[in-house]
Length: 366
Image (cartoon, rainbow, N blue to C red; front, side, top):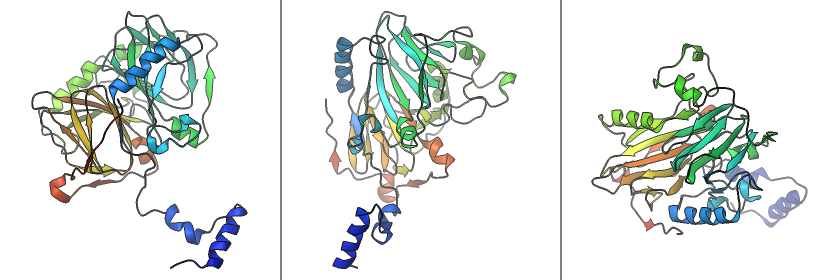
């Protein structure tokens, strides 16, 4: 029903008095289904690396810069101010960090919880909660909320990794605190790679960890993750995600990071996944291989080193375009948050045998 001039005038008056008319806003407040502000998007490896290389020339870590990292801004959230509020999704911040030989990224801690996936380079070490942890390509590492952490490159080449934090979520909830350690690096309290040594057997835990612990294992080695994927590969793949494993906390069985979920998945040569959508959002890094993901009818072609984002409630399906090489995709998600509030919902695409019609091909910035 069309609103009369009198009602429109009344609505305007309410706005001027910092009030709102529910009768004209109810369908914006209670939508039929989620309407994500972030949009499906893809960032090319070449674009990120070129800007990181320029940053390497312009600034030194530890000398005026706590971290040298370029973070992903979803175009759908670009208008949020300050810029840091506009993450890759409405809850997840993602970045690529570079640490050159000899550099030390100073120690701090914050409310936001963090994780890292080592992309390439040897020689980096991280200190987390008094433990020095080795960084190697393919490793997944966690930094729980309010834990001291710093990074150093003790090798001879620049090391690159993906950072993911729940900064947009903590900023929106107005619970963000940060504290800086009085020295550049925290003091070590246990032997190097202590947690990895304790969990050398994989998914068997020391009896002392029977009680839940926030982060009994700080580093998930690539060779163990690969072994898990290789075992799954002897079975039938998931119709949507191929062969996928989640990183978990061995003392609880829940996500390794209590507010950010993380996965590694393998798409076998020629894999064509079916489409589905879910409430939780994802940030993907292409660790190995080439292929594409169709999101709401748009084809996003990706290759090794690229990043792409799947916002909430977006139809998506993955395809490995190679007939001989496997694809490895690392991803982070906000599923733990969605499950905590009972928000999660999943829906399968039923048309065309589960595959979307491709209406457009995304053109990335290089």
